[in-house]
Structures are given as C-alpha cells and as structure tokens.
Image (tube, rainbow, N blue to C red):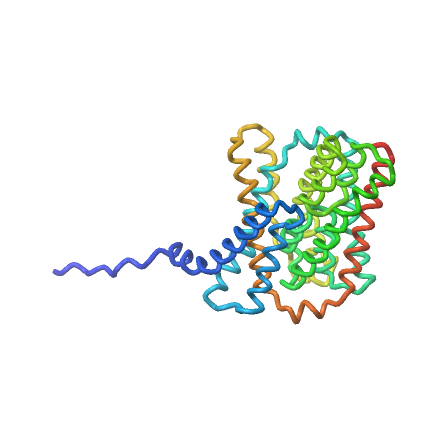
Length: 341
C-alpha cells in the first residue's frame, strides 16, 4: 500500500506577513532615518524628526499616492510600531528622577495634565471642534506633544487628518513657546529653578521644553528636563483615563467601547523596571535612538495616509483651540511656580 504523499509545506504565516508589510514599513523607516540625519546634521533642535517625517509623508502621499503594495506596512507603522515605541519610551523615565523633583513640583506636573486635558476638551466643544481632534490637541498640549497625540489616538480613534492637524497645531504652538519663554522668563526675573520648572511644566515637546529650559542656565535645564519627564510619565495614566472617558460616552465617539491601551501599561512596567537599575545603560541609550526612529516612522505613515482635502475642511477653529490650550497651560504652570513649588 502506497504511503500518502504529503503536500509541500506552505510558507509560514509570519514570513508571508513580513513580506506583506516590508515595503511600506521600510519606506516609513527610511523616511524617519533621513529626518533624524537632517536634524543631527543641522544641529537645529526645532527640526523635530517627527515633524519632518510628517511633512515628508504628506508630500509623498500627495504626489505618489498610496499604492496597494505599501498599505499593509503603512498600517503596521501606524499601530503596532507606534505602540512598541511608547512602551520603550518608559525606559527613559525613572521613579528616582520623579522623586527628586519634590512633592510640590510633582503635584504641579499632575495638575497641569489633569486640568489642561479636560479644559481643552471642554473648550473644543464650545468652539465646535470635533471631539477626537479636541482630545488629541489637549493630550499633546498637556503631556508631551507628538508622542502623546499618536498614543492618545489609540483610544480617541480620530481620523488620520485629525492626527495630522493636531500635530501641526502642537508643533506651531510649541515652537512659539520655545521662542517666547526665555524672553518672558527674563522679563519676569525668574530664578533658574523656577524658570526651568515653568518651561518643563508648560511646553509641549520634550526637545522644545528642554531647549527652552536650557536657555535659563544649567539649573534651569536640569529642573526643566526632570519636570518634563514627570509629564511624560503621566502619558500612560492620561491615555487610560481618556480611554475610560471615551468608553463612558463622554463624547460622540463613545458609542462603542474604546480599546484597552495595553501599551500604556507596558510603558509603566518599563518605568518600574528601569528604576530598579537592572536595565543595562546600553539598552537605555539604545532606546534614545530607537524610540524617535519608531515614532517618526509612525508619523510618516500617518502623513502618507492623510487626505489633504479633508484636512483643509477642519478650518481655523482647531488652531484657535491649540493656542488657547497653550496659553492655559502656560498660565497654570506659572501660577504653580509662583506659589513657591
């Protein structure tokens, strides 16, 4: 009796998946790498690789379009790659750094996040801005700019155009803050520590906050950097709270249950792990390179997916919301510093 002939082994599903996502994902990573090279070569801190990647992605999407062969990789960069980047970001914050700020400064960090986000959502409703876009602008202003926006969209579930608009608004407002804060700090005669805490508590992007704080001197740079890291630490709790808000029906998007942001818990887990001292220094340093690359690749994918016509329909109200939210957090942080924190 003849033995049955077995069929040829089919290619592994993981290998097939890799081939499917490789073209689009590789394109996004190349864009991200080039943007990092440009920023490093020029030495201009304001040239955030995430912002450059967004602009490059929009340009590619508008000229080349979105070929079917690239779509799986682009989709992968927008979600799984982004979530992995947010988790790895946890290696750059330790509980010891946060404790060094003192209870008053930590309370200020919590206050600016806890008050700015709901204020922006409320004002967005008053101005007639779409809820998801208001949530993204509020999260970007309250926490850490582009990273917070793309992370928050995992639960806010805004359109690609919402994310793109929010990134543009936050970049504009954060850049203005980078320029204005050193001038205002001098005019008010603030001490180095107070000025650094103010910049770290109010300015959006990490690079913008650190750059503005450094203009106030070494002590300002140190206090501003740690204060900014305290706000970054609050990214996970804020995203979880935002997901709860959406799931409770706090906005029109709340009809369906928001996904559980497991990546936020991964972020917190790495913060705790990094605080134990068990993570090699080389791994932490590697994350400082890998995380911006991954974030820039994710945002490049968003840019490629953006519909410029839909973006134009958003109008000027979201920009007004971003400016108002920026002024709110700046005044709130200044009041906290004035209380002697």
